[in-house]
Image (cartoon, rainbow, N blue to C red; front, side):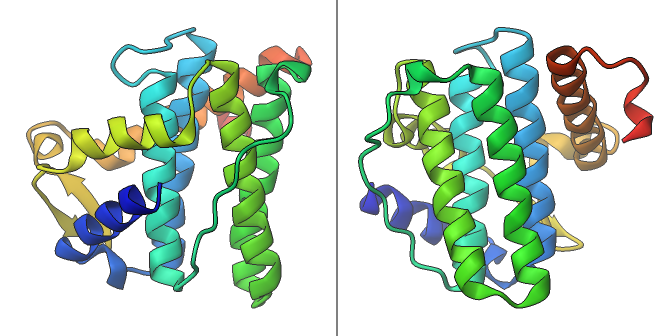
Length: 198
């Protein structure tokens, strides 16, 4: 796992992502969180933008966040059986815990920020376990997909080359992710309303 993290960090440095604002990188994390929600809701496990792909992409964004913040990530084997929890419950805890990362950053509480990053990885590992995979396997899938990716930084956000041929790729992805997070929450708690109420 350490070797994969080194490769992701090298990839990020080559593209200048280690110099962007942590809050900007965190928005990419939220985008990937939305993609994971979409994959879970649509029961898209290993297709394009599926659960496995999304777990790997989520890790890439969080690893780059840690690179920006100069936080060393320590991984351990998950000792909790993921089968004891529903996927939705794990996902909701993942959303809650990951939101505490940026809250801790904004308050200057580095120890809490690190703890929340570790907890986020732990929860992500449990989500991966629900799909009979691991963080390492999904990170390897993600790295193999991005390693030759070209693009450019726009306002501190890496936009892949393919998205420049489409309209507003980054903004569309973020909005799409927000809508899928709302759908997951709405379905879980049987709420009415529209996603623009978030």
